[in-house]
Length: 263
Image 1 (cartoon, rainbow, N blue to C red):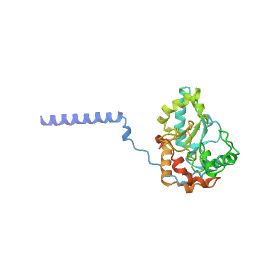
Image 2 (tube, rainbow, N blue to C red):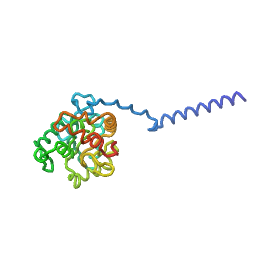
Image 3 (tube, rainbow, N blue to C red):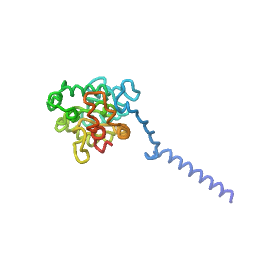
Image 4 (tube, rainbow, N blue to C red):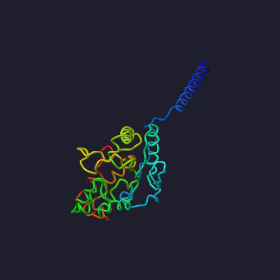
C-alpha cells in the first residue's frame, strides 16, 4: 500500500511541475524584470561641442528623403528609428511631419552665427546685428534669441530636430496647430520633448520659444547632464563675439536653459 501511495505522490508532483513549466513558458516576462539597456558611454567634449563630422561617425545615419525636406541631413541612429515610428503614427492621423534641420556640427553652426553677426543674414524681426547694435554682448544676446553659439547647440548632438516650419505662428492654426497639438500629446510616448517652451518661472532664461524644435530624450538627457558637469563658458571660442560667452553665462542660461521635462 505504501509503495502505491509513494508512486501516486511522485506522479502527482511530476504533473504539477510540467504544468507550472508550461505556464512560465507561455507567460511574458514582466517589463521590470527584463534586462536593462546598458548605460551609454560618456561623450568627449569635442562631441558635446560639435567638433566632428557626422558623416564619419558610426552612430549617425543619413535621414531618408521621405522624412526630410532635402538630402544630406544626419541624425543619431536611435533618434531616427524613434522618429520613423512617430512619423508613422502621426501619418495614420493624417498629420504631415517633415524634418527641416537635424545635426549641425560646429562648422555649420559657425557659418550661421557669423552671417548673423556680420549682418549678412538679417534676423527674422528685421534686425541687422552689425549695423543696428554696437556692443559685442548685445549683438550676441540678440542672436541668442533663436540661434545658438557654435559649440553650444543641441543640434551638435544628433538628438534634436526642427520640423515643418521655423515660425511659431505656423503651429498656431491649420495643419501646423494639428501637428503641434498631436506632438504635445504623443511625442513623449516616443521619447521626444520640446526643450524651448515659453519663458516663465520654470524657464526664465534661454532661447525664445521654438514650437518646431524637438529633442530625443533617451540620448539628449545624458548629454545635457554631461554638459552641466563638464562644459564651461571658457571653452566657447572660435567665432565672432565668442569673448562674450563668459559674461553672458551661456552654459547655464542657454545650454541648460531648457524645459525641465527635457532634463
